[in-house]
Length: 381
Image 1 (cartoon, one colour):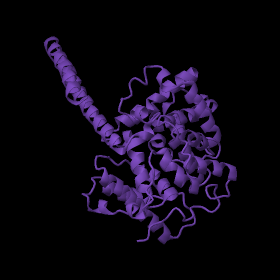
Image 2: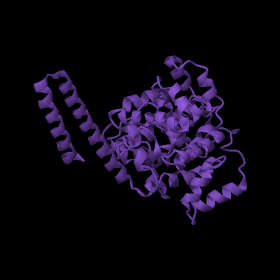
Image 3: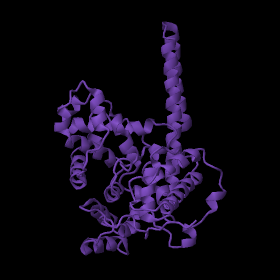
Image 4: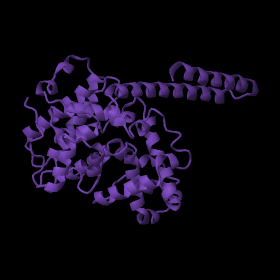
């Protein structure tokens, strides 16, 4: 089956394929070329209109993800992964791929959509078989389809591998708890910026942000040019900036939220789980950077930052993470997976302590839990 390429038009009328301001394209091409100025590239990707078009993104996104794409087409088309064992989640991948490409690209024939879905399945399956420790999550296909449309079927697998292991690793662990840890930063960010609004939302758990943050907003944003632009920004910034972006969306809806009773947590959850339309991306991006600068993670209240695992992408995908090889991502994944198992064992021990909470049993099990915690740290961490 013929693979789609990034040269296939996605939408002829959107800004990703419109004539670009030559000055900015020239600047981006320069910093992606022999000059190789990542700091300047980050600034350009963050500034208005981001990386401008998909042709520029094909050069810039790999650099923002910390790798140099292969110039050998035979390496890009390496099919040895097909001989690897099946991944446990491939059935779910097939079901999700069948529901892909709902909003974009537009004006596609049935055969064109079938070809794109086949390519999408191939990219996801290749990544999962190559790194079988990764757990697929529903919504991963929303992210990957954007990479497929921008980079093409040959180059997308390398980019998605780096994304999975370096940027969204927490979402691909066998437990949802690391993903929920991201959401628990939201109240701390809101408290730091707007204590009154934070109090108003205090009866509503931040799970309303899960679908958006888990999929880097690809599940909710229906316009291709908008999601490609947002990816420019998110790939350029620290992984935690995605959480700050959602916090800024909440702050931008302050007046609307105050019109809903703080006791009506169901309505607040419903409203907050839907992104506003239209989404003023450029304003939100600018305000997000101000929010991040004013309240960096280390300064957040409630010891929110201290509770984040040292192996989380929120802490490892910062500063010089682009110098980390993929093997580092694999090692960090394994360390965090071990930490999750340790935490589960401790929680089970605590549950046992509660079950046998008589004086004698409580003392004995309390000692047991303490000894278990020390042993786990020495053995695994």
